[in-house]
Length: 266
Image (tube, rainbow, N blue to C red; front, side):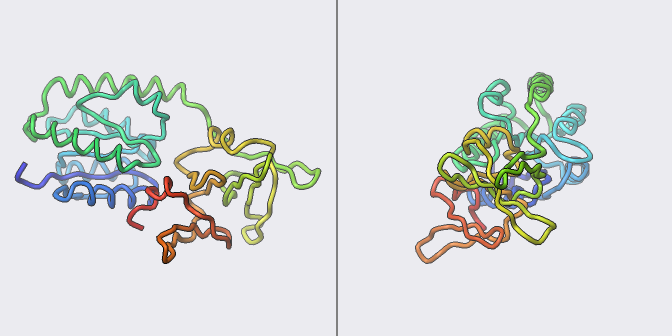
């Protein structure tokens, strides 16, 4: 593959778009990211304009989601190879893993993304850019049907958190939550109040149980004792020893070594 390979990225989370683009630039130096899009409509326009070799598509996006966009691309004679970006757990994703189309789980693992890049390189060697093989279209049809089935089975994530302050029970919108922190047998919930004050609440649940009920697109576990709301992160800083800390709600939370890949390149 002597000529440059082109790709687009489409994801409605700015931090995830940045994270994926940076990781791809590190793993595949001659991959040319020709467009970075915030929704499916922007991605469709970018594909029409640039006719990229590869499209990294979030499954859930506003205006036109990844599945709907993939369905539209089935009708094109110059459809790119598609890699879905998804928050499905690995069990579910295994059901639709194929040689023609791959997936990347959120939060993105560098090791997994590297394997995806190798798979894409092999596919591009085998196929001419301007004539997608018929079996690729068949695989896309099968994959599309399987993802629709999985979508119907996908659990609904919490929109509200029931938490205690003293003896009083409160109902907290997950969008107001800054972070969760494990404390002995309880989990502390730190949330905004009136967009100014930060209040601590308690929930009688383990961090592991809570993690299964909140959207992994929006909440990242950065340490065995803490989960943060990505949209509420103020900044991420590295100290002189190379340790990362997340600044959120006026406090600094350490990032474990295993979670540092979430912030690679920042």
